[in-house]
Amino acid sequence: MVKAEIINGPINFFPSEDNRQQDGAELVFNGRVRATEHGENITALEYEQYEGMAEAELTQLAEEAEKKFPIHDLFCKHRIGKVEVGETSLHVSIWSKHRREGLDAMDFFITELKKRVPIWKWAILEDGSRIPSKCDH
Amino acid sequence: MIITPKELHDRKGEFTIVDVRSEKQINEFPMDDLETIIFNGGSIPNMKGSKVLVCQFGIVTEGMILENKLDDTFSLLGGAQAWIEFQSKNEDLSRWSRQTILPEVGMDGQKKLLNATVAIVGMGGLGCPAAQSLIAAGVGKLILIDGDIVELSNLHRQPLYGVNDLNRLKVEVAKERLEQLNNKAVIVPIDKYFNEENGMSFIQDANVIIDATDNIQARQLIDRFSKDANVPMIYGGLFRYEGQVAVLNVNGSPGYCELFPEPPSGGDSCADAGVLGMVPGILGNIQALEAVKLIIGITPNLVGKLLFYDGMNHITQTIEL
Amino acid sequence: MIKIKVKCFSQVKYALGIDNLNLEFESGTSTSQLEKFIRRKANGELDGIPLRIALNQKYIPDETELQDGDEVAFIPPVQGG
Image 1 (cartoon, each protein chain N blue to C red):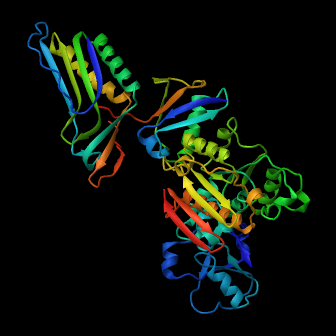
Image 2 (cartoon, chains in turn red, cyan, blue):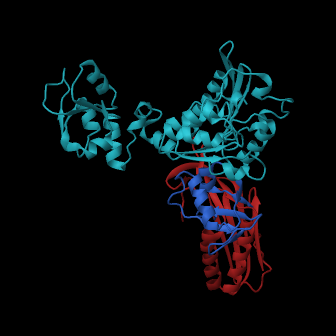
């Protein structure tokens, strides 16, 4: 099963569920905002999305990961709007029988997300100005 | 007598070229590919043959030639600045040397003008002076939109048209006159009235729209298309000796509908109220000046502001929108 | 004439100064022609920036003819995650 959401505001992490008796591996990835963006000091990032298309692409990508790797569940949340340094902007949980397919699916999902999902970062600099991030990885 | 960079390039061997600039200027702005004699003290020595004098912007040497009544001596139009631009980019911008000398304009600003397109809606009292000034300043392309023909009562305030032009389409006459001011510009005459069906296609390619119309419906339509296509609109309105100019819809800044949420009723055209031609002449030029500022990026400007001009008392006032 | 809505994000929004454009073109205009128009409007600020095209919220692999009412987005390199 997959769940993919774009949300405004702080992310409530998916709970780690102890009753998952067939899942030997539970992987969690949290992408956090660092204090520098492409070499510049920032106070926050502001995430912008193409409303409608971003969630559709995120869902489609999650479904692709589920098809490509024998995982059980993939839940993810991507935050948009202002995210302060240190806070989480992306949260992904994957449950699988063994760790190999879980690790591979996580790698695939995040790599593809960074290529396809129409979300962008605006850097809020120390002087308060706001410019498109030049980050390209 | 003057010589342009292009002419000098083609006829180099015919002249002795004398660089009268300071050492600092010569080092900071070297003139490549030109053999010059450096001379920056006192009067020019008597040399046989034709000479070209070069200073930084081409103005000092013109003065020198006149003052000293120098024979067989040319001043390089636009000076070293124009020569360097010509050598590096193969563009002779010396024609505009009197404006490129302005620090706010320079060669970069001039090139922005050359690459710009201005749409002028209405070629009457405001449109004529605006078009003249913009073409002369070097705007690369003008789109002129007006379905009217020239009438006798237009001539007092629409100085592009003359007694031999009566009953001809305004935009066609304007194109002929304007081409004489700048034969390199592209002028697109559209002999139609700006309306819902055609309006967007006329303006969406432009960098700026000059509202030189005389009715509210046209202004509201221009405002809508201006917002839709994100092309700034320079509003111009007048009544007898008074006028207004505002620069609207610059990346979401207030537009005509925000400026006049309840538009004034009744006619506001020159025909109804009466006008002396100088007033639209002044306001059309203010519109053109603001268009140039927008294109080049010069501030301060009238973005988000409304300028009131009172030609009777010569008072101007600017308010924030 | 066909009416097209253009959505602007990130560097495109920064270059054009606006979120959305509502434009009109001749029937038969293609996505590539629209891209040329947008790049021209950006006055060089989008030079060297690769743009993918999304038509009605789906990426399109090839040049496509536009229809009345289409929504087009020029997608600069994305930065999610």
